[in-house]
Length: 375
Image (cartoon, rainbow, N blue to C red; front, side, top):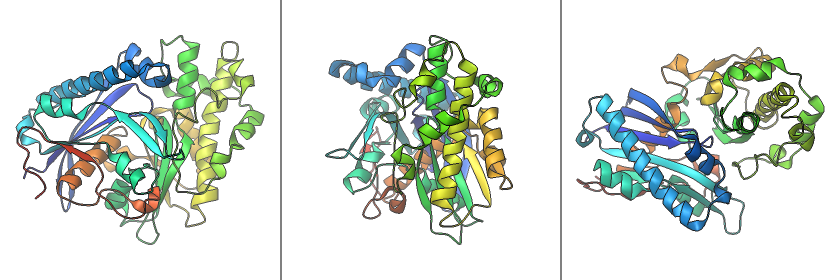
């Protein structure tokens, strides 16, 4: 069996699809390549506002993303000079358009049709990872902690912090029981304001440059921090269903066009504050990390990282790039790993991080052209 696995991740920000190819073994992995393919603005708009879509439009979007993922996968492999026949499996997270683990009944919904991906590439596809975790009593998220535990769990106590649209952490180390949960907003609130401010011309505040020029409204920070989600004990997960424009205080909304720097400065600091608060109130009760390792698009927001370094000092805040992984490659790499484990019949999540009743094999397998089943 080939050991090459391809991971595909389209995150909460909805601005593009990221792919990572790795060679896995029982001793570890070798990252072969990584690339992000940006979405057209019209597609990002649909992903960001799924509630505005009709049932037929969501159905069409499911197949549209399946085709897009397929083209990206084939182009990515071609650029790496890897034949699809050399890849044993694709792990596709899909695009989350709803996540409701607290609903009655609990549910989650990812799209990006795996049948299209399997048909176009000929490769076995594992998708829809979250559903099985929810069926087993879990939150369906965060799932990345299983990867964190496997590859960082034998070292010193560290916090693996991912800042995508939503931020989440995993605390791992050889002398600590792992803990993991979604913290709250990552880039999502700042991205929404930037898009609103520029009428969609820009999707994010590059480097946090606008935020750096503004003045922080600490009363607004305090107001947002009072939301009950932040004091809720793990396991817990969240998404755009909670952290969207309706979460932002009205007094900030009214200032987007007149004081954009101040609004972004406030949301930028609040994002860092929420991350630090989660560590001091929910993580340090276990053990404090010796290092915070950051991945995700938030790594590139210099203002946000500076806030984190100031709040966490003297604990170092470093990029996962220092460990040989591109900050935006970690999530697709993790789903490549989850798929590789699934087709080998191995557990691929951390139930104590999601609240599931026990270990499970997550994901639905869509056979490619040479499907051989679990060995």
